[in-house]
Length: 180
Length: 407
Image (cartoon, rainbow over all chains, first blue to last red; front, side, top):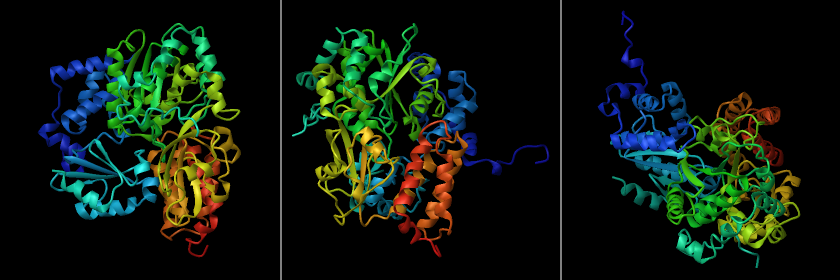
């Protein structure tokens, strides 16, 4: 520690993960690079494709590590700082590897009136984790999120790509059991 | 029986397909509009009294006419499908069940504003709507409706309420965080990628084909003196039949609640949010109000996105405000100090009030902070938060006070 080498314990989990996780060493395939160029060509300024390419990066690498940010920055000739600013602004980009499934329960007003607090408490108890956390076995990331605009079927949640509507504790149990 | 215009195809299980859309008369409006002069299309939409249905209620034809005539470079049409206002779900239905109505509206709007390229910004969480709309766009390309002088790019958002604000949306489309921009210049002068841009809501554009087919007078006649047409009301909360309902914009809030089966829970109405989370709350005796842009303005609230959230007598108003205050604290983009600081602070105060740890002067502090910040920020987000902060407390103050020790 005398020569200025940073202590690993000072680093955030995301930084540590990016340093040690081999999966964090990132690059797209040739075909994907072709898709990046196609996306960039759709916009008057190629930078318009940044969000779509970040979606691609997340699908490919599982989450957006700092290395992924740096890699995407090179594809756009942007600074990594710009990409980091974008990634951290939006809720759908994961900066650490999420669980194999993401359960996002809406806690906004219509869902609240229809019993969302009870649904959230039930998921907490079932999974043994709080919103924002991932089960130890890496199976489920649990989130409480703002309005997903399916208020006619409140309370509701997004489970991976699907909207699950009119939730009850029993329905939640069945949904969670189905997630492997 | 009131006329159903926007949801006319919803009962057909194949309504999202080109075949079904054509079979119900779809793309006839485009056939007609392509023979019209662009200025004549805009004039027709103006005369129809179509007003933006995303939230601001600006007259659509007037907005289109702001594109500078002398401009020779590209003009963009940007579709705001970043639905996110609490209590609103109408655009999800349109994208999933009648995507060709949107595409046809886009074709006509594009001709009116002389635009050859459009971007459709769909919120990232809307996976099924995105799939349905993408499939419809592909059908339209294959059928030669798109790609001959007009292209559509579908752009998926990544989770940020502020990107529903039109200039925040444009920042996001440009590959940046969704920070709103100072107006003027308005997007019609300098919008996406620095070019003149019209940003229209999904439902607004879906109104355009029927206006062209059946005429401005017919559309204007469906509504009130200052707003034509019907619109889709998202009704949720404590009603017996929460759903999206189409009705003329002259319908009253009382009629709309009855249409949704009446109040559930205790069956006794306490309050209603008439136009999405950011609208000032109305009490049970304020519901004889017309659900158009100007009717709600007169009532001291706003129609916004027409998301109606009903609360029966058992609902805790302080708790409802806490839920919304948490939302505003979470979604403030952080650009303007009054909004960034006040949304967090006010959430803390409302939260501790609900937990019965409120301080004696919290309510006055919230009102003071809310009023001081109103109108001082770049975009309308903070004003949208101030509406609930002030109205919930002023109209239900005793309910808050009952929770504050030694109040």
